[in-house]
Each structure stands twice: as structure tokens, then as C-alpha cells.
Length: 406
Image (tube, rainbow, N blue to C red):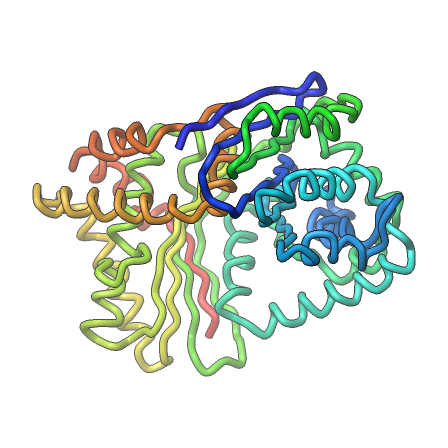
């Protein structure tokens, strides 16, 4: 699939890929998330994502929810450390409806007081639900250890103390400071000419006054790796081992993706899954992940196991890390690993919604979108020396932080 792009005078970027499917997708991605919050705003980026749907100058909450659902479509949103995204799925004949609704939500929300009160209770319940799931909560606690005293390390949902205090003024101030037009990407995939997408984008988003980014994000400061144990009343013990990793602009990130896939990616034949689950049955769930951001990245390995098997599981984990640091992959092993990653990416790209969100993020941070063949070429260019160097930089014991729920 090829993508066309266009930039509105206010700085909002538009990118579109044409398909022959009757189903279409669009999203507005804003380069603003949890890391852009001041301390007293903890949880505000995520809270705004919720209340954007609670009323605009022309619609009440019910009418927002019904606008696409009445024609079989879907409307949703999410918040990350660095992005807030509104996205929708609909039939191609409803493009105008979807784009107008995105504009109405993002630029004309009124944030009624009574809706804010109700949504605070919803978010507080979401936080309570999250605390009941140690396998999810541990990731947030782990990132707080990696990024101490920095907004990047704070969890996305926020804290009850601050959420209860949020006001309409807090919302408007955050939006004015962070929802900058030069930090927005509108992305679309569907069976509609690019010229039509541009016309609709100009009609709605082009009318917005330019609001260019003036503030810079806080730099990520160095931190020391550590080991921390936390007492929890859980049947299993949960553990995360990891560290900071390459950012979105580091040329080593492609090799890091491949190394992570070999170690604990989604395949059942990953080394950690074979060692801890298939061969020994020590852990039901073990996985590793690598997420690059604009100026940092996070690598982590998670597993949960019965307390009687925990020490053996942790020892096996470190054995697998040591092997990757000390032993090069064989020629056939490397070729197999590359083919697996390329295949996974090709299959993922068949999901047009996931592809749209990936393209929007790529355009946000690189102002370009790599073709599938270019990505394949970069993967094929990885050597065993590349992987060995990355393994020794990222997986060395001296750089790893460990968090254990006992």
C-alpha cells in the first residue's frame, strides 16, 4: 500500500492509504501523553481522553456515541506515554461523518461539569480494577523504577488524589499547552480518493488556528539499576527484569526488535517460552517486550510463577540472557529469526486498523513511512555481530533492574 501526504497551513499533517475494502479507518494522533503532565496533572492526559466524548458545542454524550454506531461503525480512543489518539472504523460511505465527528470531539468539546464528576468515578474504578491485576500493575511500578522523579515513569491512569481535583480549567490549560497543531497527524485508510480526504481535512481541521509547540519535554535523566521486592497477597510471584533501551531514532532499534523476538516475542518458539513453559512448566506466561519512544525506550521481561518455582525460573531467565550475550546465532538460526519477524510484520499489516495507527506514529516522529520492502531490507541487513553487540549493551547484568512481587 502506498500513502499520500499533505500538510494543512496550521501544521496538521494528513496521510492516506487507499484500499478497495468497503471498511475504512481514520484517526487523529496527538503528540501529547502522560509524560507531558506536570506533577499536579498526573492522570490528566488519560482523563481528557475519557471526557472528550462527554459533550461538544453541538452534541451531548449520547449523540457522540450514536453518530457512528447508528451506521455500524465504532469510535474509540487511547492514551500512551507520548500520544493521545481518537480512532474510528466505519463504512467507506461514512467518511464525512467520521471526519466531522473527530473534528467535533477534538476541537469543540465543552467538558460539562456534571459529566466530569461522573467520569472521575469511572476512572477511579478503572484504577481499582487495575490494582486487582498484579500482572498489569507491575509494569507501571517497574517503569517508575526506571524513570524515578520523572513524568515518564508515572502510570497513565493517574492517582486518585489528583484526579479528584481536576477542573475544567486544568483540562483547557493542558490542551492549550500540548494539543499543538504541528504535533497532530490525521491518518486514514479506505476506498476514497486522496483528494477527497484532503478536501474534508481542509474543511474541518483547516479551520483551526495554528497552535505551534512552544514547550520542550523534560530530558530523561540517568538512573541506577536496582533490585526491589514488594510484598503482595498473591498466589503467584510476579517478576519484571529490564532496562532503558534504544529510542525511535537509534539505528540499533531494528536489531533490538529482532533480538527481543528471539528472546520472548509472541511466538511459542521464543527462547523464554521454551525454557520456562514448554520444557519445565514453571511459568504459564512469560514474555519480553521492547517499546521505543522519542528519546528513550523500554525493554522488559515479565513472568509469573508458583512461588516454589520462582527462583528456578529467574535463574533460567538469566541463563537465556547470558547465552545471547556470549554466543552468536548460527547462520540458520539468524535466517529463521529474520523470516519469523518479517512474517509477523506482514500478517500484522493485513489488519488495516493496526496499520493505520502504526503509519500515524511513524509519520508523527519521522515525517515519513517506510515501505514493507525497505523494512525487510533493514531486517535482512542485521548480522550476528549486530545482535551480539546489542545483547551485551542491553542485557548485561549491570544494566538490569528487577522488580519482584512476592
